[in-house]
Length: 232
Image (cartoon, rainbow, N blue to C red; front, side, top):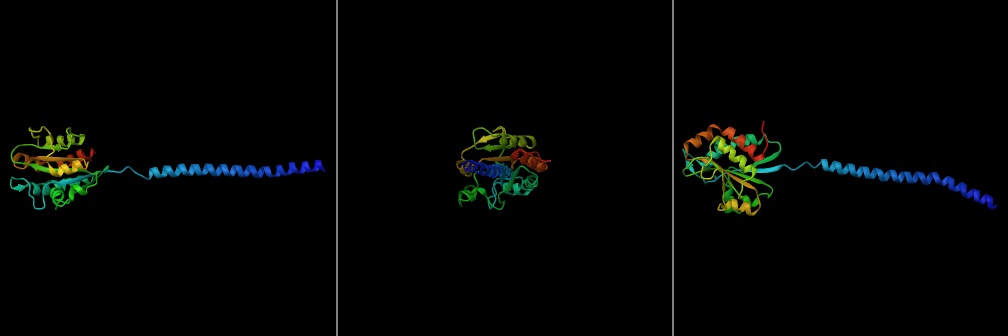
């Protein structure tokens, strides 16, 4: 009897052993599958999140009843919107690595900011603002007004465009660091990156002539300088 009992016990264990091994193998396989699935899901999630494009907001100076500077039969607000804006929009559409939008040309960013507490106060802090203006009352050439003591790479690229097509204002040699412009101070205090481009003197016949003659090339070069992207 004792011998038969032992034999039966061993036989029972032998019968259960395949089941235990099968269960262990299945559990291990399921764990491995879950780990693989989790890694695959994480990779897919990572691939599904493309890098956010840099956003640039381009602003035409003055407007909405504010003519800006006057010269050569036109005003700063009119010249910028009539000659420069259409060309900038044209080349902004060709950029692939950045997002470019334009401030409503029927409005004035400065007055919206200073008198209505909108404008620069409502901009996303990750936005980079590029403002275009024309200089006065007398002089030649343009320059870039910067918000730090030293120009950024973008500021330097924009200054090169001015130098090539219009010429630089000798008084600044390309750049002017200013802290007395109220709207720009709002941007600075909010930590918003910006450049203000004085494209030339509206009172200078040669400056205006060169701006009109090369406007398409200037606009293309400005967009390339802003985004650091070559346009074909």
